[in-house]
Amino acid sequence: MEDLNSILKEAVERGASDIMLVAGLPAAMKINGVIEREGRERLMPEDTERLVKEIYHVSKDRDINTLLKNGDDDFSFSLPGLSRFRVNVLKQRDSLAAVIRVVSFDLPNRIDKGIPDNVMEFAKLRKGLVLVTGPAGSGKSTTLACMIDAINNSRSDHIVTIEDPIEFLHRHNLSVVTQREIATDTESYETALRAVLRQAPDVILLGEMRDYETIKVAITAAETGHLVISTLHTVGAVNTIDRIIDIFPPEQQQQIRMQLAMVLQGVVSQQLITTVDGKVKPAFEVMVVNTAIRNMIREAKAHQMENVILSSAAEGMITMDSSLLQLVKSGAVSAMEALDHSSNPEQLQKRLKAEGLIK
Picture 1 (cartoon, rainbow, N blue to C red):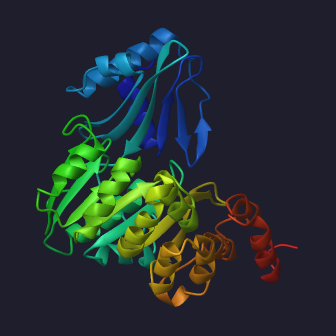
Picture 2 (cartoon, helix red, strand yellow):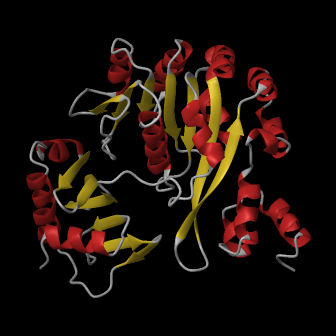
């Protein structure tokens, strides 16, 4: 039976994004969005337990009792000369399992990753709240890493990242970069956020705005003149605004609308789309918060924002469907794949027909 090191090495060599170790199946790897598991021995519960214990062994400081007590555990570890790995270990059907994300030691290159200029413009901001949204595995962490790297290479700031777990490692360049991991370096997002305001930050990267308290403190940090960059698991700018407001009790929602209208600078929503050659390419919706958008947030008219995004290409805005249409026109993505990821398939279908891309 394979050991952990050989599985991780093969995953890196084959360009896998994720590794799944679950009892009852062979070790599986996700490559270009497709899970591959052929040609391997099926893992038994004792095999997954052995592999999980190996993971804790190579991560050194991590205590397996966290997993045994809570049923799951998130952390990251590095293997020198190979790669970094972000891991979630869990109990399932009375056995141990693990899902491992492969993370390069090198910071991602935003050109190679297809991150456009209108997204990177947000890294030039000095204050306010910028949100990068999308489903799990859509490349949000990569976009955040590119933004932080751009700031680190262009100005002398104190950047504080609060992550669960730390994914990409940033070296000190023009900026000083402090990276804190939940559970290892601080108790929780909320605790770290409250403390960060006493750490002279210029830029705060918050791995995820998970709940009411975290969102509340993040908005407060943005109000006090810091640039706060964070993520939410939402698709689309309109859904993101609604999600933030809906987390708060009804009696607080108008106050949050007022605060959000003041501090929000932009929302980037992204998805990874399978290309015609079997790889993946990102599609981006970009909303820059201008005066019209601020008024719509304040007045609870989020449903009108898409029209503003559609008509504001000159300001760097683009809807998800327009981004998908561009990918189809370039020949990178099939019309069917674009329609599968569309927020409004009927409307996109009409646009594809008008362009002569489908019958």
